[in-house]
Image 1 (cartoon, rainbow, N blue to C red):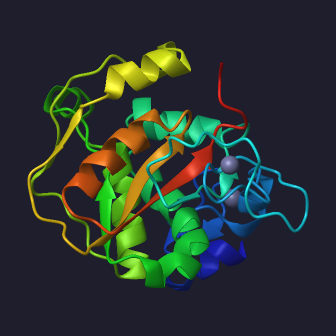
Image 2: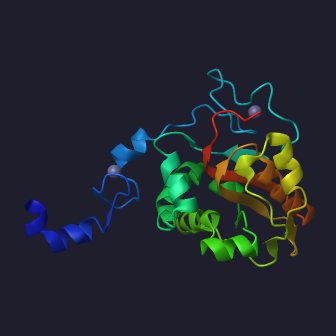
Image 3: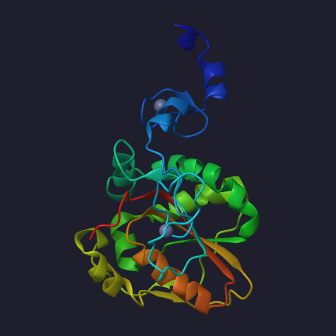
Length: 233
Ligand SMILES: [Zn+2]
Ligand SMILES: [Zn+2]
């Protein structure tokens, strides 16, 4: 009733609705729904896997082949978050990129001073044509707008069309993605955050981080909305 009477005012105060509960919000997912998403607590700063024993910053067994200086993934790729990631990726729900990006931006804010450029994981042009948009770029746009970090796109490409990573084992993923990215621009001295939706084995992020480092970047972090709880064997 109150909502009907004050509809115009309501619209000004809460210009959008939460993608999960439909309630009023101005921050993508509303606060109660955000609290329902599983947090990736006390995660290792190098591989993003948690939870570590309290006080520890780094795990003992993370794969030393990581090409990134730091991984940030505030949530776990699990219910009820996963359906929104799938909907953004495969269900055409492009607007979810903004809502998920808002959660990532909030967690990445303390890292802001380490980073001066954002690179979203590029899609191969054929995949981009099929999907109509790049889900990682949709998340990156939201993070960029909130943290005021420019997105670099020109000269950064996925030059190898790879089969979907989700059907492969960790070793196959690594082989599948090696050399998939080309960076044809000078990134000397740049401090870059790679943005993706989910980090699973890290094969994609590492392959892109490698190419970014080869172009001269001095720091490469990877920021993703979610981390798979444990790397699949
Ligand atoms: Zn909600
Ligand atoms: Zn680790």
